[in-house]
Structure formats: C-alpha cells, structure tokens
Image 1 (cartoon, rainbow, N blue to C red):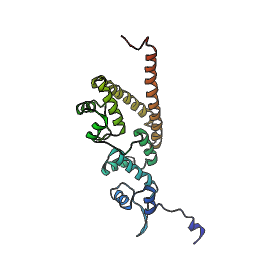
Image 2: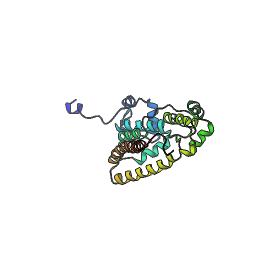
Image 3: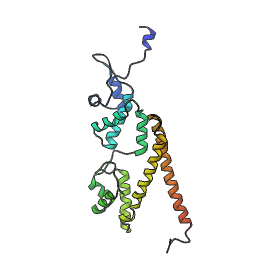
Image 4: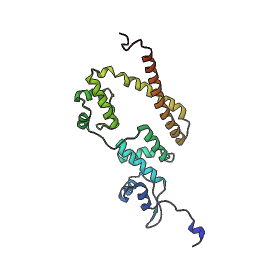
Length: 232
C-alpha cells in the first residue's frame, strides 16, 4: 500500500465511532436514521457505511429537543428539516442552551410541585392562568418554576394577590415584543449562521440590559425617598 493511499482521509465515521462519540447504542442511531432524522451514510460495501461527522452534533440536537422540549421524533424532524442545508447544529445547540439556560432533566408533576412549593391548588391555577407561572412543558415544572412557586407562596403568606402582580406579564409581553422586533430588524438579512451568532449576543445583552435598567430605576426611586414609607 502506498503512502498516498494510507494518508487518504476517511469518508466519515463508522457506526462504532458514531456510538462512541454520542454515547448512544447502535439501535437508537439506526432508529433515528429510519425516521429520517439523520442523513443516509455513504456505503462502500455491504458492511461498510460511513456517517457524516455532522451527525454527532445533529444527534446532540435531537437529544436536547427530546429532553428539554419533550418533542416527539416527528416534531423534531420538522425542526431539523426547516434548517436543512443551513444549520450548524453545534451553533444551534449553543443558542438553545443560552436561551433556555442550563435545564436539568429533573421535573415535577402538579402534586409534586404543590408539595415542593407550599402553594395551594387554587393559587397555582390562578398563577398558571395569568402566566405568572409559565412552564416550558405543560403539566411539568422545572427548577426555575419551583423557585418562583416558593416566592409566590411566600408572597401569598404576606398578602400579595395574584392580580396585583399581573403587571409583570403585561409589561413582560411588551418588552419581549420589542426585543423580538429589534432582533428581526438586525438579523433578517443575515445568513443562518450569522443570525444564530448575532442572536446569542443579543440574548446576553438583553438579559444584562433588563437587569441593569430595572435595578437602576428601582435604586434611584428608593434613593429619592425621604424615608421608608413611600407616599404615606
């Protein structure tokens, strides 16, 4: 065998290598393939199939959408098909992780959530109705939902009514609408990759700006008070 033949690049990943890179068994990867979620491998013989290296990131995206968004494989195929030929799956995973933050696999059903937070069933229903509690997956509550549920339970204990804090959702909707309008204006002409990169930076900037502006407004308001009893 010549040195030129020895140095010839491999046409892709063998199944064993793809399993090792993703941590999934062969049966799961073949199931994804049969469902049309992965591109067909290059076949160079009856027992020689090579998978495109991009399958590693694509599989990571599939697993992410299954775990954190509870999507079916059919729904995931629609998501993947919309970005076919354009998407850098590693980049999209980074964007997903940034937008949805570090979501753990742990979740609570309604009864477990009530027990974990101390909320009353009727109070929980009102918070859900007003979207002051707004789970990503209907009927399942994650760690952030539990943390907010405990805050709402404390608020109810000192007399805070749901209708008194509904303004958070009303103003939040307006804020998000403005942010989305700004994102569309700045990214509509960009390539898929540049859109994802710019959106990630905008998410970081938006989170920092919300916290800074609202905290500063609050701090200046408090600093202007002659004493603790505002308006009394």
